[in-house]
Amino acid sequence: MMNLRSAAWSSFLLALVLYAAVPADAQDAKKLHDQANSETSQEKQVQLLCKAADLESKNKEYRKDCDMARNALITSDKQALKTALDAADSQQTAKAKRYAKYVSSLDPDTHRQAEQLLARLNAGDAPPPTTTPVTPPPQPNQSGALLAQALTAYDSGNLQAAKTAAQGVTDPAVKGAASRILADIDRYNGYVSAGRQHEQAKEYADAERSYQAAFDLNGHVSGDDLAGKTRNMHQLASAPHAPVTVAKVEPPKTTVPKAPATTPPPVSPEERKKQLLSESALAMNRNDLDTAGRKFKQVLDLDPSNEDAKRGLATITAQLSKDPVRLEKTLREAITAFYTSNFEDATARLNRYLGADGGKKKGAAYFYLGATEATLSFLDDPSRRASLAKAAQDDFKQARSAGYQPVEKYVSGRVLAVWKSSGS
Image (cartoon, rainbow, N blue to C red):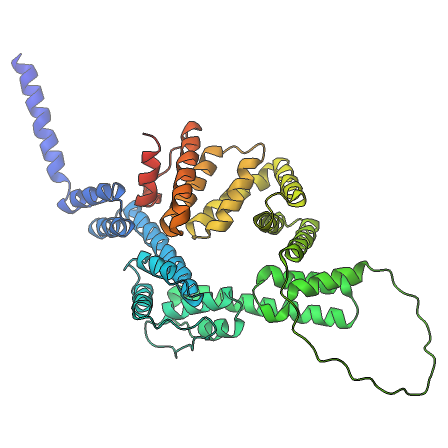
């Protein structure tokens, strides 16, 4: 009996010695790391993870978790700021305020811009939507602001303003993103220039491809009317060639003055549907299923009962079902779109994946679809929040039924709270 007690006491003493041998910083770091995983505030979660990484600098996993959480929050903040700026330009004051308040204080530049926007909105002096913002000269620590301006201008089709802002970015941390914007502007201009050259040479099929490539890169440059040019080139390329005749020389006639040019009428919803269906067909011919799927979805947004769009989406789903490699790539791209806050793209890809046969990771797809809907329920208009939250709960339940369990450290605290509530 004494030997057993002696052995137990020795084991207890050994455990104390081993625990004491662990540095205090490592113990504190583990507590902070564990606390972060249960934290509902994404900003607080980042602070805890990064503090744990600082305390236990040799732990590579802690540093990796800190960096991933920080980058995800900064990306989310920039997307929220962009949405707020766009809403302010469209005079949607309530929406602009809501998204500006969502921006955390993690990135000083992004947070400062959100605070300045809120101050302008609260003072009632937000600039009108037609006013082109003047890009300030580059100043120290202004690269983040310039990049946000470049992204906003590029997405709205103002390429000159986007180029000016992107050229002012000097911070190495964001200069790569600015360089990609400049490269996309150069590619766009190159496609448009090539399209014009082919059009002048009456090479209509080549002109159509060039204009379509420019439109796919940026379809918001209204002055170029790429959709109309692509449609015209398609019609000219499809038309039978008329026989060449020798014109007769006739005496000059009195020139009748041409009627003054008039502004073309706005495109009707019916014309817009025809345009989108034509662009979808071109994308299908190029085997560009992502572009085709996006345009078919836009048709259904205009006309939910449109049979052409439904058949097009069904064809895309059937093609994905026959190509397992491409199908799994669709899921990877959807998850990437979610983590970069491209929620529309993420939703479209996830729905295509779930609609196809042969997907081996349905649980993951349902989870990220639910995560997308949950995130949008925090950001979107109040009228849609309830339906989005309900959809997120339903998809999370499907993910649970498929046996999926997310890696919680890669999920924001707010989304994780919705996920946990779906299991109750």
